[in-house]
Image (cartoon, rainbow, N blue to C red; front, side, top):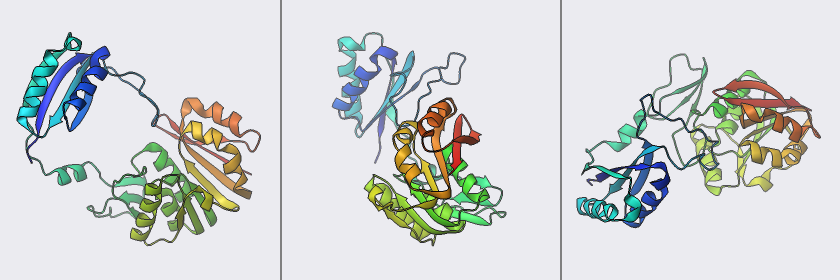
Length: 294
């Protein structure tokens, strides 16, 4: 099916109005990007995953909407330019989107991910690298965790370089990638839990695809003590979960936390101080891994 793309330029304070109007005019999707990207005027906007964006747009934002029909895109352009809120905005272009093999294009964006020299995350459409001795087969899906994010890589690197024998809990399992890694690196029992039922289902399917056995379920399935407790979430829920996660760590066990920005280290140390002492064990691209032993 051919798609048609309407491109508009607008200042930061009009992005929300324009996006909402395009949505009301039956746009299939609306995207916003910095119109000055790749120039000296480019603005970097940084935000924590799962949190509101720090700004609604850039000083000069390029708003692009996709429509199923050219007539719909044309009508939207005419109607928008007649509105008061379009003042300061500019029509850029309207045209057909070139036909693409979207499946192949999407797959091309996901290459094997190196965790260690011998441990790799490999999508099913790729062959494992020759040096890979341990492989997790994982394709992009709805649940978080494909190995491309620094927090996931740090957790997997920790798993690969430490003994994870015994019981392991993956709290907030997403795709199940950490639980699968723990199972492949010697855990005798792995429990993976998440509040999202889609994540629980994804974890079960990914575990089966990697020939590992684990228990996947909702958080109430996490019972008893564990030799290793893994939680790759975000700083705020990790602080709230401090008493619960620490209560699951067996004497002599280890707690491994990720999803934490470097500037949040002190917050986590303070939140966990009544239960244990956290230290920074790894860092990558502004993110940190924190661990402790009870």
